[in-house]
Image 1 (cartoon, one colour):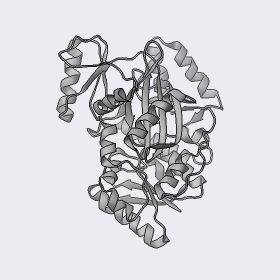
Image 2 (cartoon, rainbow, N blue to C red):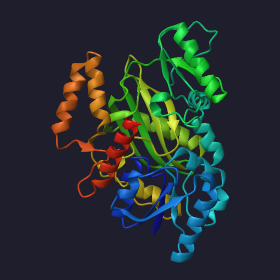
Image 3 (cartoon, helix red, strand yellow):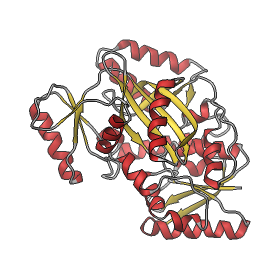
Image 4 (cartoon, rainbow, N blue to C red):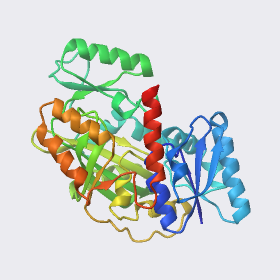
Length: 374
Protein backbone atom coordinates (compact mmCIF):
# COMPACT_ATOMS: atom_id res chain seq x y z
CA UNK A 1 0.00 0.00 0.00
CA UNK A 2 1.23 3.48 -0.89
CA UNK A 3 0.44 6.98 0.32
CA UNK A 4 1.40 10.25 -1.36
CA UNK A 5 1.81 13.00 1.23
CA UNK A 6 1.98 16.50 -0.26
CA UNK A 7 3.29 19.86 0.96
CA UNK A 8 5.99 18.32 3.12
CA UNK A 9 7.63 21.68 3.81
CA UNK A 10 5.04 21.98 6.58
CA UNK A 11 6.40 20.60 9.84
CA UNK A 12 3.13 18.81 10.67
CA UNK A 13 3.48 16.65 7.54
CA UNK A 14 6.26 14.71 9.26
CA UNK A 15 3.88 13.23 11.84
CA UNK A 16 1.67 11.92 9.05
CA UNK A 17 4.67 10.43 7.24
CA UNK A 18 5.96 8.71 10.38
CA UNK A 19 2.56 7.29 11.33
CA UNK A 20 1.97 5.78 7.90
CA UNK A 21 5.49 4.35 7.67
CA UNK A 22 5.09 2.76 11.10
CA UNK A 23 1.88 1.13 9.83
CA UNK A 24 3.77 -0.47 6.94
CA UNK A 25 2.69 2.00 4.25
CA UNK A 26 5.12 3.08 1.53
CA UNK A 27 5.23 6.87 1.73
CA UNK A 28 6.00 9.14 -1.21
CA UNK A 29 6.79 12.66 0.02
CA UNK A 30 5.75 15.21 -2.59
CA UNK A 31 6.73 18.88 -2.73
CA UNK A 32 6.55 21.78 -5.17
CA UNK A 33 9.65 23.08 -6.91
CA UNK A 34 9.31 26.49 -5.26
CA UNK A 35 10.27 25.06 -1.84
CA UNK A 36 13.82 24.04 -1.03
CA UNK A 37 14.83 21.57 1.69
CA UNK A 38 11.32 20.55 2.79
CA UNK A 39 11.47 19.01 6.27
CA UNK A 40 9.42 15.96 5.28
CA UNK A 41 12.06 14.87 2.75
CA UNK A 42 14.43 14.15 5.63
CA UNK A 43 12.23 11.67 7.48
CA UNK A 44 13.31 8.04 7.56
CA UNK A 45 9.70 7.13 6.90
CA UNK A 46 9.91 8.35 3.29
CA UNK A 47 10.45 5.69 0.62
CA UNK A 48 10.53 8.15 -2.31
CA UNK A 49 10.87 11.91 -2.74
CA UNK A 50 9.05 13.64 -5.59
CA UNK A 51 9.32 17.27 -6.72
CA UNK A 52 6.57 18.62 -8.98
CA UNK A 53 5.93 21.94 -10.70
CA UNK A 54 3.83 24.42 -8.75
CA UNK A 55 2.57 25.95 -11.99
CA UNK A 56 1.19 22.63 -13.22
CA UNK A 57 0.24 21.09 -9.88
CA UNK A 58 -2.99 19.29 -10.75
CA UNK A 59 -1.70 17.63 -13.89
CA UNK A 60 1.56 16.56 -12.28
CA UNK A 61 -0.19 15.18 -9.21
CA UNK A 62 -2.51 13.22 -11.46
CA UNK A 63 0.46 11.87 -13.42
CA UNK A 64 2.24 10.87 -10.21
CA UNK A 65 -0.82 9.02 -8.92
CA UNK A 66 -1.31 7.33 -12.29
CA UNK A 67 2.33 6.21 -12.41
CA UNK A 68 2.10 4.69 -8.94
CA UNK A 69 -1.20 3.01 -9.80
CA UNK A 70 0.22 1.47 -12.98
CA UNK A 71 3.50 0.36 -11.40
CA UNK A 72 1.99 -1.20 -8.27
CA UNK A 73 -1.40 -2.29 -9.52
CA UNK A 74 -3.05 -0.52 -6.56
CA UNK A 75 -4.32 3.01 -6.23
CA UNK A 76 -2.24 5.13 -3.85
CA UNK A 77 -3.89 7.23 -1.16
CA UNK A 78 -3.40 10.92 -1.92
CA UNK A 79 -3.20 12.87 1.35
CA UNK A 80 -2.96 16.63 0.75
CA UNK A 81 -1.49 18.66 3.61
CA UNK A 82 -1.50 22.24 2.28
CA UNK A 83 -4.63 24.34 1.82
CA UNK A 84 -3.97 25.14 -1.85
CA UNK A 85 -3.27 21.53 -2.76
CA UNK A 86 -6.39 20.42 -0.93
CA UNK A 87 -8.50 22.95 -2.84
CA UNK A 88 -7.03 21.83 -6.18
CA UNK A 89 -7.76 18.17 -5.39
CA UNK A 90 -11.22 19.02 -4.10
CA UNK A 91 -12.08 20.84 -7.33
CA UNK A 92 -10.95 17.85 -9.40
CA UNK A 93 -12.22 15.04 -7.18
CA UNK A 94 -13.62 12.93 -10.03
CA UNK A 95 -10.38 13.05 -12.00
CA UNK A 96 -8.30 12.10 -8.96
CA UNK A 97 -10.62 9.25 -7.97
CA UNK A 98 -9.73 7.53 -11.26
CA UNK A 99 -6.06 7.19 -10.25
CA UNK A 100 -5.95 7.38 -6.44
CA UNK A 101 -7.93 7.13 -3.25
CA UNK A 102 -8.91 10.34 -1.46
CA UNK A 103 -10.84 11.28 1.64
CA UNK A 104 -11.23 15.02 1.16
CA UNK A 105 -14.25 17.33 1.24
CA UNK A 106 -16.04 18.27 -1.94
CA UNK A 107 -15.58 21.87 -3.00
CA UNK A 108 -18.88 23.02 -1.46
CA UNK A 109 -17.97 21.53 1.93
CA UNK A 110 -14.46 22.98 1.73
CA UNK A 111 -15.65 26.48 0.87
CA UNK A 112 -18.29 26.36 3.59
CA UNK A 113 -15.82 25.36 6.32
CA UNK A 114 -13.27 27.94 5.08
CA UNK A 115 -15.87 30.74 5.30
CA UNK A 116 -15.88 31.99 8.89
CA UNK A 117 -19.14 33.91 8.47
CA UNK A 118 -20.92 30.89 6.95
CA UNK A 119 -19.54 28.66 9.71
CA UNK A 120 -20.90 31.04 12.33
CA UNK A 121 -24.36 31.03 10.75
CA UNK A 122 -24.41 27.24 10.53
CA UNK A 123 -23.20 26.88 14.10
CA UNK A 124 -26.00 29.08 15.41
CA UNK A 125 -28.52 27.04 13.42
CA UNK A 126 -27.21 23.86 15.09
CA UNK A 127 -27.07 25.43 18.58
CA UNK A 128 -23.27 25.50 18.63
CA UNK A 129 -22.22 28.63 20.58
CA UNK A 130 -20.16 31.28 18.74
CA UNK A 131 -18.77 34.72 19.67
CA UNK A 132 -21.01 37.76 19.20
CA UNK A 133 -20.43 39.52 15.87
CA UNK A 134 -20.62 43.18 14.92
CA UNK A 135 -21.01 45.41 11.89
CA UNK A 136 -19.01 48.63 11.64
CA UNK A 137 -22.19 50.60 12.24
CA UNK A 138 -23.01 48.76 15.51
CA UNK A 139 -22.27 49.97 18.99
CA UNK A 140 -19.10 47.96 19.59
CA UNK A 141 -17.81 46.77 22.94
CA UNK A 142 -14.01 46.64 22.86
CA UNK A 143 -11.74 44.79 22.52
CA UNK A 144 -12.79 42.94 19.36
CA UNK A 145 -11.09 40.56 16.95
CA UNK A 146 -10.93 41.49 13.25
CA UNK A 147 -10.18 38.69 10.78
CA UNK A 148 -10.65 37.93 7.08
CA UNK A 149 -13.25 35.40 5.93
CA UNK A 150 -10.47 33.08 4.77
CA UNK A 151 -6.96 34.30 5.52
CA UNK A 152 -5.38 31.14 4.13
CA UNK A 153 -6.46 32.01 0.57
CA UNK A 154 -4.76 35.38 0.95
CA UNK A 155 -1.51 33.64 1.88
CA UNK A 156 -1.53 34.89 5.47
CA UNK A 157 0.25 32.96 8.21
CA UNK A 158 -1.72 32.00 11.31
CA UNK A 159 -0.34 34.99 13.23
CA UNK A 160 -1.36 37.38 10.40
CA UNK A 161 -4.98 36.25 10.17
CA UNK A 162 -6.37 38.40 12.96
CA UNK A 163 -6.01 41.76 14.69
CA UNK A 164 -7.13 42.51 18.24
CA UNK A 165 -8.52 46.04 18.21
CA UNK A 166 -9.08 48.06 21.38
CA UNK A 167 -10.18 51.29 19.71
CA UNK A 168 -12.25 52.52 16.78
CA UNK A 169 -9.13 53.76 14.99
CA UNK A 170 -7.42 50.38 15.26
CA UNK A 171 -10.60 48.57 14.18
CA UNK A 172 -11.00 50.73 11.07
CA UNK A 173 -7.33 50.30 10.18
CA UNK A 174 -7.52 46.50 10.43
CA UNK A 175 -10.85 46.41 8.60
CA UNK A 176 -9.47 48.39 5.66
CA UNK A 177 -6.31 46.26 5.55
CA UNK A 178 -8.17 42.94 5.32
CA UNK A 179 -10.76 44.31 2.90
CA UNK A 180 -8.07 45.48 0.47
CA UNK A 181 -6.23 42.19 0.83
CA UNK A 182 -9.17 39.84 0.22
CA UNK A 183 -11.88 41.93 -1.45
CA UNK A 184 -14.35 40.74 1.20
CA UNK A 185 -15.74 42.41 4.29
CA UNK A 186 -13.76 41.08 7.27
CA UNK A 187 -15.43 39.67 10.37
CA UNK A 188 -15.64 41.65 13.60
CA UNK A 189 -16.38 39.58 16.69
CA UNK A 190 -16.08 39.85 20.44
CA UNK A 191 -12.75 39.06 22.05
CA UNK A 192 -12.91 36.00 24.29
CA UNK A 193 -10.62 36.08 27.31
CA UNK A 194 -10.56 32.35 28.11
CA UNK A 195 -8.29 29.56 26.96
CA UNK A 196 -8.26 27.91 23.55
CA UNK A 197 -9.18 24.34 22.66
CA UNK A 198 -9.74 22.20 19.59
CA UNK A 199 -11.49 19.08 18.39
CA UNK A 200 -9.77 17.32 15.49
CA UNK A 201 -11.59 14.71 13.42
CA UNK A 202 -11.41 12.25 10.57
CA UNK A 203 -14.88 12.15 9.03
CA UNK A 204 -16.41 9.91 6.37
CA UNK A 205 -19.73 10.88 4.79
CA UNK A 206 -20.89 12.84 7.82
CA UNK A 207 -19.68 10.39 10.47
CA UNK A 208 -16.77 11.02 12.82
CA UNK A 209 -14.42 8.02 12.55
CA UNK A 210 -11.63 9.37 14.77
CA UNK A 211 -11.24 12.39 17.03
CA UNK A 212 -8.79 14.04 19.40
CA UNK A 213 -9.47 17.06 21.59
CA UNK A 214 -6.81 19.35 22.99
CA UNK A 215 -6.43 22.48 25.05
CA UNK A 216 -3.97 25.24 24.29
CA UNK A 217 -1.40 25.90 27.03
CA UNK A 218 0.93 28.41 25.40
CA UNK A 219 0.85 30.19 22.06
CA UNK A 220 3.09 32.35 19.93
CA UNK A 221 2.46 35.20 19.42
CA UNK A 222 1.02 35.21 22.92
CA UNK A 223 -2.12 37.16 22.00
CA UNK A 224 -3.84 34.51 19.92
CA UNK A 225 -1.16 32.93 17.74
CA UNK A 226 -0.78 29.23 16.96
CA UNK A 227 -0.17 26.75 19.79
CA UNK A 228 3.42 26.34 20.90
CA UNK A 229 2.33 23.96 23.66
CA UNK A 230 -0.89 21.96 23.90
CA UNK A 231 -2.29 18.98 25.75
CA UNK A 232 -4.63 16.16 24.75
CA UNK A 233 -7.88 16.19 26.72
CA UNK A 234 -11.22 14.41 26.72
CA UNK A 235 -14.23 16.60 25.98
CA UNK A 236 -17.63 15.18 25.12
CA UNK A 237 -18.93 18.73 24.68
CA UNK A 238 -16.42 19.73 21.99
CA UNK A 239 -16.96 16.41 20.20
CA UNK A 240 -20.72 16.97 20.30
CA UNK A 241 -20.36 20.39 18.67
CA UNK A 242 -17.99 19.12 15.96
CA UNK A 243 -20.11 16.03 15.27
CA UNK A 244 -23.24 18.14 14.79
CA UNK A 245 -21.59 20.14 12.00
CA UNK A 246 -19.95 17.11 10.42
CA UNK A 247 -23.25 15.22 10.33
CA UNK A 248 -25.27 18.16 9.01
CA UNK A 249 -22.88 18.78 6.09
CA UNK A 250 -22.05 15.13 5.31
CA UNK A 251 -18.39 16.12 5.52
CA UNK A 252 -15.54 13.82 4.45
CA UNK A 253 -11.90 14.45 5.34
CA UNK A 254 -9.88 15.78 8.24
CA UNK A 255 -10.74 18.99 10.08
CA UNK A 256 -9.94 20.82 13.28
CA UNK A 257 -12.68 22.77 15.07
CA UNK A 258 -11.15 25.66 17.00
CA UNK A 259 -12.82 26.93 20.18
CA UNK A 260 -12.14 29.55 22.80
CA UNK A 261 -13.66 29.99 26.22
CA UNK A 262 -15.48 33.10 27.35
CA UNK A 263 -15.10 34.70 30.79
CA UNK A 264 -17.38 32.01 32.28
CA UNK A 265 -15.26 29.20 30.85
CA UNK A 266 -17.83 28.16 28.23
CA UNK A 267 -16.38 27.27 24.84
CA UNK A 268 -17.49 28.96 21.62
CA UNK A 269 -16.60 27.94 18.09
CA UNK A 270 -14.18 30.35 16.39
CA UNK A 271 -13.50 28.63 13.07
CA UNK A 272 -12.90 25.35 11.30
CA UNK A 273 -9.64 24.33 9.63
CA UNK A 274 -10.73 21.77 6.98
CA UNK A 275 -7.20 20.46 6.41
CA UNK A 276 -4.12 19.29 8.30
CA UNK A 277 -3.53 21.81 11.13
CA UNK A 278 -0.59 23.00 13.20
CA UNK A 279 -1.10 20.72 16.20
CA UNK A 280 -1.64 17.62 14.03
CA UNK A 281 1.47 15.89 15.54
CA UNK A 282 -0.51 15.54 18.79
CA UNK A 283 -2.39 12.74 17.02
CA UNK A 284 0.94 10.89 16.80
CA UNK A 285 2.63 11.66 20.13
CA UNK A 286 -0.53 10.58 21.96
CA UNK A 287 -0.20 7.13 20.37
CA UNK A 288 -3.47 7.23 18.42
CA UNK A 289 -4.05 5.63 15.01
CA UNK A 290 -5.65 8.82 13.64
CA UNK A 291 -3.48 9.01 10.50
CA UNK A 292 -3.95 5.36 9.62
CA UNK A 293 -7.73 5.73 9.80
CA UNK A 294 -7.50 8.68 7.40
CA UNK A 295 -5.39 6.49 5.09
CA UNK A 296 -7.91 3.62 5.19
CA UNK A 297 -10.77 6.05 4.57
CA UNK A 298 -8.89 7.45 1.56
CA UNK A 299 -8.74 4.01 -0.03
CA UNK A 300 -12.31 3.10 0.88
CA UNK A 301 -11.09 0.21 3.04
CA UNK A 302 -12.84 -0.99 6.24
CA UNK A 303 -11.86 1.31 9.09
CA UNK A 304 -10.10 -0.16 12.10
CA UNK A 305 -11.18 0.72 15.63
CA UNK A 306 -9.99 4.16 16.69
CA UNK A 307 -7.35 4.04 19.40
CA UNK A 308 -7.55 7.39 21.14
CA UNK A 309 -4.12 7.24 22.74
CA UNK A 310 -3.02 8.66 26.04
CA UNK A 311 -3.20 12.14 27.51
CA UNK A 312 0.05 13.88 26.70
CA UNK A 313 1.52 17.37 26.47
CA UNK A 314 3.30 18.48 23.28
CA UNK A 315 5.58 21.43 22.55
CA UNK A 316 7.10 23.02 19.47
CA UNK A 317 10.61 24.40 19.81
CA UNK A 318 11.88 27.03 19.18
CA UNK A 319 8.43 28.73 18.99
CA UNK A 320 7.74 27.75 22.61
CA UNK A 321 10.94 29.51 23.71
CA UNK A 322 9.64 32.66 22.00
CA UNK A 323 6.27 32.17 23.69
CA UNK A 324 7.89 31.85 27.11
CA UNK A 325 9.75 35.13 26.60
CA UNK A 326 6.55 36.74 25.35
CA UNK A 327 4.68 35.77 28.52
CA UNK A 328 7.55 37.06 30.65
CA UNK A 329 7.43 40.44 28.87
CA UNK A 330 3.67 40.53 29.52
CA UNK A 331 4.26 40.06 33.25
CA UNK A 332 3.03 36.45 33.26
CA UNK A 333 6.00 34.72 34.92
CA UNK A 334 3.91 31.66 35.79
CA UNK A 335 3.68 30.62 32.14
CA UNK A 336 7.38 31.32 31.67
CA UNK A 337 8.41 29.02 34.52
CA UNK A 338 5.85 26.40 33.44
CA UNK A 339 7.59 26.38 30.07
CA UNK A 340 10.95 25.83 31.74
CA UNK A 341 9.49 22.87 33.64
CA UNK A 342 8.17 21.39 30.40
CA UNK A 343 11.60 21.83 28.84
CA UNK A 344 13.20 19.40 31.30
CA UNK A 345 10.22 17.06 31.64
CA UNK A 346 10.88 13.88 29.60
CA UNK A 347 7.14 13.13 29.44
CA UNK A 348 6.51 16.29 27.41
CA UNK A 349 6.80 15.41 23.73
CA UNK A 350 8.35 17.46 20.94
CA UNK A 351 6.00 17.85 17.99
CA UNK A 352 8.79 17.47 15.41
CA UNK A 353 11.95 16.06 16.97
CA UNK A 354 11.73 12.33 17.53
CA UNK A 355 14.24 9.70 18.61
CA UNK A 356 15.48 7.80 15.57
CA UNK A 357 14.29 10.49 13.15
CA UNK A 358 15.99 13.76 14.11
CA UNK A 359 16.85 14.95 10.60
CA UNK A 360 13.49 16.68 9.92
CA UNK A 361 13.92 18.78 13.08
CA UNK A 362 17.43 19.80 12.06
CA UNK A 363 16.12 20.77 8.61
CA UNK A 364 13.37 22.82 10.27
CA UNK A 365 15.92 24.69 12.40
CA UNK A 366 18.02 25.40 9.31
CA UNK A 367 14.98 26.86 7.55
CA UNK A 368 14.31 29.17 10.50
CA UNK A 369 17.91 30.39 10.45
CA UNK A 370 17.70 31.05 6.70
CA UNK A 371 14.52 33.08 7.16
CA UNK A 372 16.19 34.99 9.98
CA UNK A 373 19.14 35.96 7.78
CA UNK A 374 16.78 37.21 5.08
